[in-house]
Image (tube, rainbow, N blue to C red; front, side, top):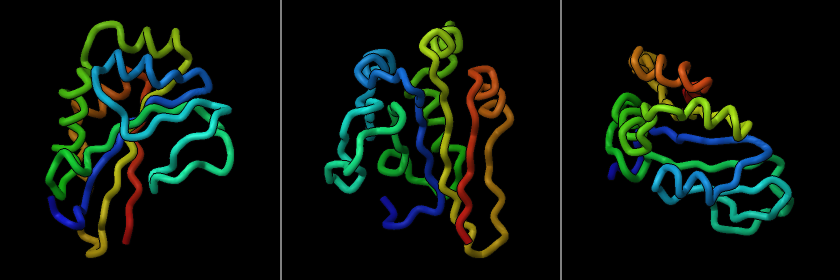
Length: 138
């Protein structure tokens, strides 16, 4: 992998009622981050949190799985790996009272890069009631 990729993404399931074990079983993927609201957790640096989680979270990152400076391959990785097009997912998210989002890292130091989020992926996230957030760094 590149030491510094100019793009990567994280898929999050968030909400007060997130049970990480449920989402691990549902997606068949071990999370990179798992937080239960009100419980202490391990931070991304590997240290114990100083305070309990304020919200539940289940998350997976593309950074170590996809090598690309463009967002599209990172986002497509999640759509395929997590089978985000499966029937009934939106209903399940609503029943569980949780939301989904893509959080995207976008390095634009040159100032001339435009994030490449394909329309079909935007449509997929909208159909799930989710969001795509791009954190751009200059």
